[in-house]
Length: 471
Ligand code: ARG
Image (tube, rainbow, N blue to C red; front, side, top):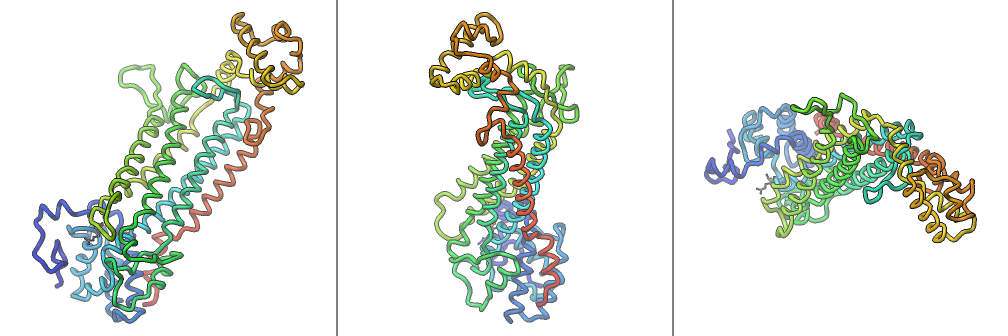
């Protein structure tokens, strides 16, 4: 029986157990088993079809390969060695044929690309769902008014729908970023071997096709050290989580007694172990907190890659933790955000009160006055004087007060101070009065994200296909 185990692949002595424990990535790599098997199946098919490995031997190897499960993996340096060791337990030295014209260097580059591609599909499905539910909710909250904020000071009246569309616009950009990551990983690294290629007459085009990549990588030295696609994915995820953290920050503030524009349903609100009256937004605080992990992962990956010499270096194995953590982290946050946002109730009364008590429609009044021919800066100053007078008198904006400031204020101008009118009048593109088209945009982007996800060749389908493909 061929022994692959723990260092014996090099033909040398067994590794010190301490060294094996220190250097093994198997604990994390196990998550790449499906990817590794799919890659091995494609490679094996190519070896057989190219006449490099006899068909009967390839049949035997494949029959065992497809049966390998996580629990079959012995303790080894990584998932690649563990799969080979598991195979050699079942087969004689035939098992060793699988590694012809392949290195773990191109193997891990492939596994990681397959992983990122799969994770992008899963993330895009989740973003599509989030965008759809934001669009739906926005449709239901067009008449719920509340202040928008600049410098965390009440700024101008908007609808809750406008807020939701604003959040959606961020996640639509994330869908776009994920689609571009898909393009970045759409390159087959398989066949460059350890770094310089192989003297076997392999067919890289065939494995590319079998694995549904669009291109093959152009230079082995670059290929085995390239983790740009991983960086792009971790960056796209970190940015999406950063977006989630900003939405969470609004929800946390808006659900306080101080703001009061939102209430959390009991299903998502947590209590305090001591204060019986508390209803806490822990879910949103965790969403905000977990974005830190995503940024940490991006930093970790950057630091791992910085200054590495050309070709493969074992440091690259440290890509595993930040990369493997990213997909599930991203999905869980997007899912919680979607569930959480669907379980918020807006308090329209509080929103309106906040608008009326703080002269947030002053800009509308100034604009309406300027539309009558008063230069905007003059209208701005006059409206400023009016607001200060009203504030001093603790009075709402009235025509009478306005006339005392300047006779050019009239009923027409004052009508712009109605919060509903204020929102409706913002008809400029991207404005608060144009949420209908913003909702359509989110619906469209949701559909696009869903389609991009559906177009990704998925691992389970490839596995099934390659398990049966002719050899
Ligand atoms: N476990 C390694 C990694 O994850 C696989 C490649 C190892 N290559 C090597 N020459 N030791 O990066």
